[in-house]
Image (tube, rainbow, N blue to C red; front, side):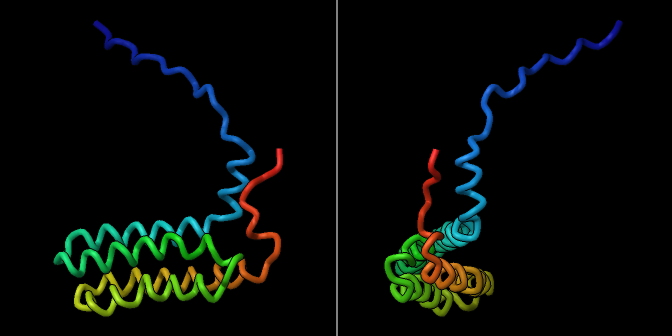
Length: 128
């Protein structure tokens, strides 16, 4: 008696859009900073209520910061610093919170200032 054959799966019927791939390739560092902001929010959820609010608001600022530098690199820098530093200072004892904050600053600041000075970078859409 032989084992039954595994069911056949159909190959994917969709192809990744070249435009979407181009947008992700061009903005992968911005996306990475956003992921660090999401991670900060997840870390904040396990804190006391006041600290959780600080960490959640800070995480949202970290997510937003790399997407606004074409309007104001200084404003985006302020968003990133205000989003990371207070939560890292308040939760310094956890060690991971300051490390996430330092990573967000180390990756985010060059992204903000490169995008802020590059006239081509702010355009997120790809022409068909």
